[in-house]
Amino acid sequence: MQLNDVESRLLDVFEAILEHPVSREVNRQSDGAWDSLRHMQLVFAVEAAFPVQFGEEEIPRLNSFRDFLERIGDPNAPSTHQ
Amino acid sequence: MHHQLTSEGHAFRLRPVGRDDAALIVRLRTEAPERIRYVHPVSPDVRRQEEWIEAYQERAGDYYWVVERKGSCAPEGLIGLYHLDEAALQAEWGRWVLRPGSLAAAESALLLYRLAFTALNLRQVYCLTVAENLPVLSFHDTCGLRRESVVPGAFTLQDGIHDAVKHVCEVDHWPAVEQRLEPMARQIGQKLMVAQ
Image (cartoon, rainbow over all chains, first blue to last red; front, side, top):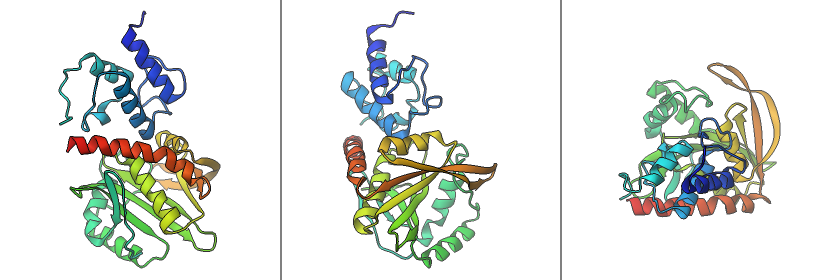
């Protein structure tokens, strides 16, 4: 399956933070390197790479590559960021 | 032990546990079974927790803090430093439990190390983590701690006996650990300030 530009760039961010190759199926439960410190590194790296800001309440719910991708793809999604 | 050691960061602070925190401790250490799977079980009886706190306050070399939000003082979790060896100037840290969804992990660890190395002048802090607790093992690795050894049968939990991985942070290495945690704590603090 062809990756679009956003997916490809997001994968680059994930691989830079998790420090190993990942697929679109990567999630927090299955990846032993995705700890709470790297989770916040991911949040800030994604915010730096894409026009998106994550709210405090949604950060703990970003548990997979797809969660981040969906949120980036929907910049108007309601955020708890006040 | 009775102490007045506190530490304040960008978004969170550590304040000493008191008898009035018994219900909070019971709640944090008994709710969300998946989250507390790898910590020693405690009685759900608040009165027994009060008795434990009273005994803890009389015990030397044992520091227990509530992690709370600056401003609101809302509790976020618990963290402790204990088994303090005054001759070797080392202690173990643990009893680390945060509420589900808390963003206090990086800063609570940072504040704990800061107290250990700057207020208590320790030379080494170590932590024992259940060998199957991969997210916490990874957290310590990401912080830059050194894996020293595997301690067989170190934990007796509800589902049996578990080995532990011992991570160590020496005072000489503390600046490198601080360099990893401090910028993250600052960024999280800025985000939470904006969100208030």
